[in-house]
Length: 140
Image (cartoon, rainbow, N blue to C red; front, side):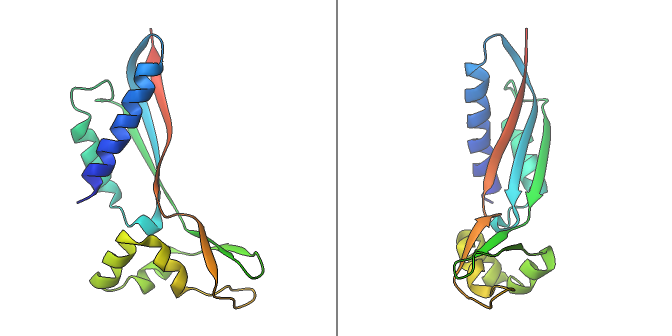
């Protein structure tokens, strides 16, 4: 369950922001973006973050987690497009493929071709990681 290690990393970033904020009293909101290709379990991440935040200024913070669809770009023609959950589930249908995508999300680009030109040299522009978007901190 790497959601715990992600939660610990997020909390570290949140605490850094808290320490750098003059007059900080508490963290009121944490906004996170989870890329669909990361295959992170959003509810497990939320639970892990609540657990590791106990006893910290982020203990009672509202946790907003948004899931971003992957965006691909064709190296041949430059076209960008997104794929749906069902497209990802189709390529990650069995447990072995899910584990490969979980560890190496860039592999997902190998399963798609450009819908415009049919090219198969594709970059993943968005949707493969976990990003701390914003931290709201109440001050005195």
